[in-house]
Length: 275
Image 1: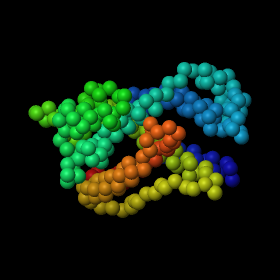
Image 2: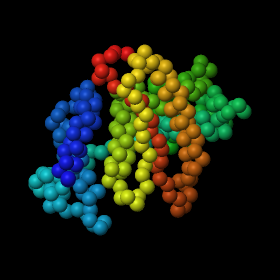
Image 3: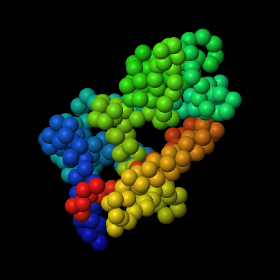
Image 4: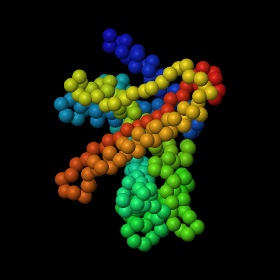
């Protein structure tokens, strides 16, 4: 039984590794570089996620779990950590927080509820005040430049700023777009792994799909418009809910948890039909 599960898991890995392999090769990443990264991920996960009764995992057990030699485990463990995922996530979060604050904070809204056009400086309802409230310690010059480049905001001839999007979406395949893609994949993978390995008494985390393999390809433009409208509406309602339940990090003793929902479209052109 256990062997059948392992074989099924390997077959499933081939499915999700194909798009990852395409992404890596288009980014100039070789198989050897990915293999080394995979080795590091196995060792890191074994040490951090597979301790017994809260005790640290030793090198011998990590070698047993990963199939690596103890020498390789020690070599990987001694490498300088190269993770900057949290820093990348923080940068993306600040850009998104600025746009969300512009759409939800009453100080930056018209009486109709629409985001104001903000003067660059001056007063509590200025672009400067918005950044001070929501951008944290991120360098504002770089943040503004990226928001303009991504089409999230625009600077008017008067020097004022107007918001164009509620969500920050970096340009395809630039550094921040790649960092965001990694964050999205990590969130989805964490969700799926949790649901597969959770105890029967643990609550599940929502994950679902709506799909059909026999849709007329001429319906693609209508489908894209439908998903854009409905998914955007859902994300905005979720964003409103999250904002209304946000804690104040400056309050002594306050705790918080990262929550959210991700939505993605599905399109499989393997039938050979080109839209």
